[in-house]
Structure formats: structure tokens, C-alpha cells
Image (cartoon, rainbow, N blue to C red; front, side):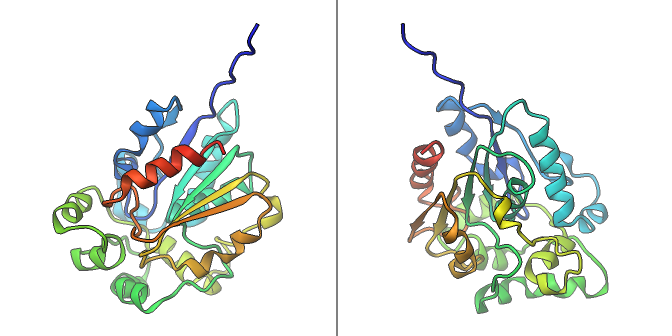
Length: 255
């Protein structure tokens, strides 16, 4: 008599800045076709949960992490988290606070203690950062900034299509990630010993937003593997090599 195959863990996709569930493009369908149960999750004031740009502006990383932890702890079993960009950092922080089966990080923002800035991302975020000098403001990338930071591997048609899915983001969250030394609440400080699940990391080799050297602390984790797709930019699941990312995701999500 053959043993029954245990059900696959639920998957939660945690999107990044300016994004929502629809930004994941074909990723949800690929996971569902592979037999995974998918939670339709969006951060507070994102996607279907968006109501007020002023409320969004004042949401911080701790608010996002608390929301995700509450969702995780409402599930009967520990889920797999797939986090992209800011969502990767949020997933990482949540996994240190509650039980997670596996952590799939896709071009994640880095935790406090890392050097985050490059000449390229400084140029792309300068306008948005200056908007925060007189109080937190929600902000959205213009086409030039999106091309510089997110879509440098895309043609204009695909870039404009992606931009229709993007939305404003929290100025408070931006400052807590980018200027973590000034954040007295240490919102992005990671409790590394508390992280006990396997971690798989996927990077775009042409990513202009998140420098690979900012993620070196991950390399010291006990169960960690990294894959770099050199031709890809930041939005790996939207770009021309999205099929390569999907293959990696399905191949590593349980390995």
C-alpha cells in the first residue's frame, strides 16, 4: 500500500514597492498549475486594500510585517513565502518572528546593517526621497525612474504595460529601508538567529535597484542557495526572461 503524499504548503506571494498582487504577472498561475494553494495577499493600502494615499504614506515596515505575520499565524500550517524587493525584506523579517516552511527571496531589499546605495539607485530615488523632507508622502515612480530602476531589461511596450500595474508607495517605508541608520525604531533590523527555515535567493544580474553586495549577510545562513540570472533586471517575473524565473521558482520551492 503506497503512502499518501502530504499536501503542499500554502504559498504567499509578498509583492514589493509600488506593486500589488497583479504585478506578479503569470507567477500565481504557474504555482497553481503546479498544485500549490495560493493566498491572494496584498500589503496594507496596496491593490484591493488601497483607500487613502495619506494613510499609505505613514505606513512603515513594522506595519507591513505585523500584517503578514497575522496572516501567517491564521493558517493551519506554516506557508512558503515568496517575497520580492521590499516584500522580500518583509518576508525575511516575518520569518524571524513566526514559523515559515521556506523562504524564497527575489531581489529582496536588504536589512539594516547593509550598504544599500549605488549611484544608479540614488539618481532614481532622489526625487521621491526629497518629497519626504517635509513629512511622509506617498510617491510613485515616473517613466524615467521606472526605466532606470525596474525595467532596464524591458522594451518600452512591456515597460508601459508594467507601469499600469504600479501604484504609489509609502514614504515612511522608503526612508526606513534606505536610511536605516536614522530609523530609531530599527524597523529593518533582522534577528538572524531566529531565522530557521531554508532560504533560496534569486537575483537579476542587471538589477539597478538592489545591489547584490547588500545581501551578503544571507550567505552565512545554514540552509541557503543563491541563483543569479545575469541578463535579468529587478522585475524578473515581468521581464523577457520571466520563464527562466518561473522554472527556478518551481524547481527550488521544495528543494
